[in-house]
Image 1 (tube, one colour):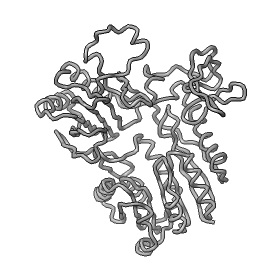
Image 2 (image 1 turned 90 degrees about the vertical axis):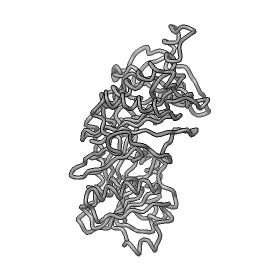
Image 3 (image 1 turned 180 degrees about the vertical axis):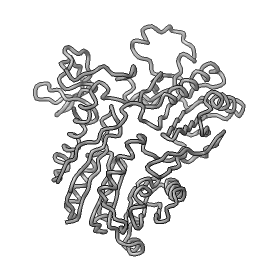
Image 4 (image 1 turned 135 degrees about the horizontal axis):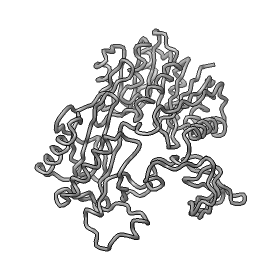
Amino acid sequence: MAAEGQAIAHWGELVVFVPYGAPGDKCTLQITRKKKNYAEARIVSIEEPSPLRITPKCSHFTTCGGCKWQHIPYEEQLKAKATQVRDAMERLGKVEVGEYLPILGSQDIYHYRNKLEFTFSNRRWITNEEFATLPDDISDAERSGLGFHIPGKFDKVLDIEQCYLGSELSNRIRNFVRTYCLERIDRYPFYDLREQHGGMRTLMIRTTDKGHTMVLIAFAQESQSDREELLSAIHEAFPEVTSLLYVLNTKLNDTFTDLPVRTYCGSPYIEETMEELTFRIGPKSFYQTNSRQALELYQVARSFAQLSGREVVYDLYTGTGTIANFVAKKARKVIGIEYVPEAIEDAHLNSQVNGLDNTLFYAGDMKDILTDNFIADHGAPDVIITDPPRAGMHPDVINTLLRTAAPRIVYVSCNPATQARDAALLVEGGYHIIKVQPVDMFPHTHHVENVMLLERI
């Protein structure tokens, strides 16, 4: 297995990357791209399948692009992810790790995602098999779909019948909304992603283990009667939906973080529990999409922090303050810093909901906030927890972090490659890596979280 969920083959001395291959497959390949040192290929036919290869559960496998490892047994996926972490540290970062702890597999390998986002399109993706049987004069309804974007094609959406990553309720809601709109296509035209017109734009469904469900529909044009009729139909068909929301988005992109979200019925938020804590999740809130495994991840981070109740903890890239609030009862004070002001508002709110009075949150650029004066005002950190985006930490942030000279750093990462790069700079600045703990949040994908403990020499 290789990076980005591909498999590796060899053509003479040339390395060939093959999507949806399994180690041990004997295949006929077609080269689709050739560079000096490598090539990319697609599988034309499998002459002799690998002993590892299993039958994918999903009918959309290889077309959807979301679960590239459904043909690989889960235990083999975990081995590949653990290897990915070790390779990143040894080959990319060239750093020495004291201990590689065994990867923590997900409790659930299907139906684990608590958030799914679907796109309406008036020109859905049609597979080669379906194209051969379609008449020339298909209707607008037959041409429209609700599902996921085809990888690399912004204007193509694959109509999804069943997604095994979301809950069964999520599948039923999506299919109901699609059918309802298709039967009234003249009033609910699906969005044209190229020409930027239409009525129905996106659908987001969020669920929690607490039994709460949020449905958010983005409309691209205003029609109060049509909007209320659809939302009323959803409410009647799914009374278990606790938060039914809508937004009007006439922009040229699907983001709605800068737009007002309206509540049709129910609450403007849903709630999730983690240990004794309750977290409110709004339509714009970030929350780990695998709730049960998020608990495992945060427990590892808290364990690595080795808190006794006397520590000052800085939580960098705090987001909505989930980690900050999770460790607060074990620390003297937790200071969260995040670039997005709306996320900080959620962080404050979640501290209030849980009665935590030892958390402080600040919004702004990390390198601008984390100054010598800031540290003097709030106290030098005993522990720094950092959970940056996939791109990792900016060199300026690393320099600022080194200047704090915190005795202990807990680095949570969704990208072991950029984590290894940053770790090399931290090691160069006087830290050594005690241990790492991979945590699988996303079964059937190549993504893996990794928690690293660094201590100052």
